[in-house]
Amino acid sequence: MGDCRYCGKSAGFLRRQHKECADRHERALGSMRELCVDAALRGAGLDALPDRVRDAAATAGIVLSDAEMSRTLAEGWRGAVEAAMEDHSLSTDEKRGLNLYRRRFGLGERELDESGHFELFRMMTLLRSLVDEGVIPRYDRKAARAKFGRLPFNLMKSEELMWVFPDVEYREQVTRREYQGSSMGMSFKVAKGVYVRPGTFKGRAVDSTSMEHTDTGLLGVTTKHIYFKGAVKGFRVRLEKIVSFDPYKDGVGIMRDTARAKPEAFGMGASNAWFLVNVIEGILDMDDVALPKSGAPSLEDLVEEEPGDEEDGGLFIAGAGASA
Image (tube, rainbow, N blue to C red; front, side, top):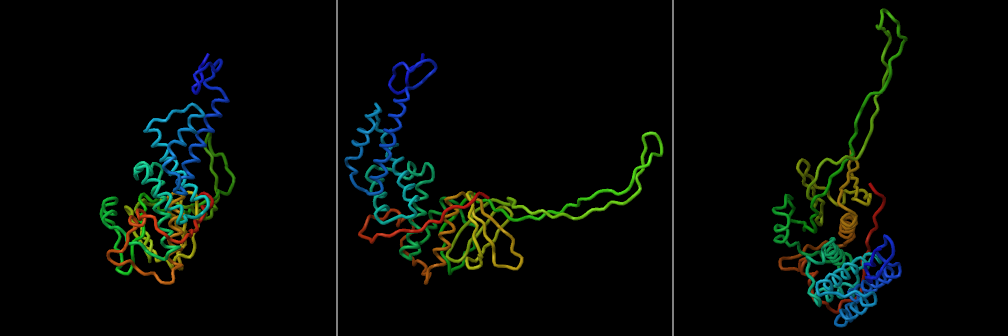
């Protein structure tokens, strides 16, 4: 006989839980998450939130330690970022709420970026600056050097670096040729175990194409180009010379505006892919690409800025397409 892991009472032969106890536990967890997500998106009711979360937990007999409460609050912030993604916008109120929430509960980047959610928040902040405000943030080169080392891109003076993606797989279309065919003629026995077949071999060349991973490296996007530098490949492509994008679940494909262009793709994950496409489209849609001056706010400054009385707005987020 086993005991229920939730209530501690007998659960029956070879059973570890009562169905009603498990359902009650899941409802409590859902309620706790919903409370945190709502508070993070609105930035309201933060002082009373811990007590409300504990009350919701108590309905299923859950007692939260301080460490567990901190993890629950961090999970709620990450859930709020996901919710902002689902409705395809990051409004002023949502950004304000997310910042108030993490400051109120002392949640740092390490706790919040467990699954890349703080990086996603930085991406959405950059897109908001481009799309809604028409402002290009100053790239923090000191922070970039600390994260990536010396960047291998020879940038032009007339462009600003926007973002750098690490560990990007570069894929290009490769054509391989092989010959297929058969011999013609009949076989004649000339001795025991020995046969001769006079005739000819008739064959034809067959070409096959496929997208193959040829290098891995850093991908940078600026106000004028995308740059790639790997172990064997290094190039830049002017944004206006990209004819089309092909979004995949695990990356994005491009086609250049050249006579001998072949499909290329960058394997970089779904969130990075939609972000890259939206940054490029945001830059190309700007009437005047004004580069930031020395001392202008960096992206880190925009992420950390104090909530203001800005007008509400949103940004469009492109969805991912079929898998590559």
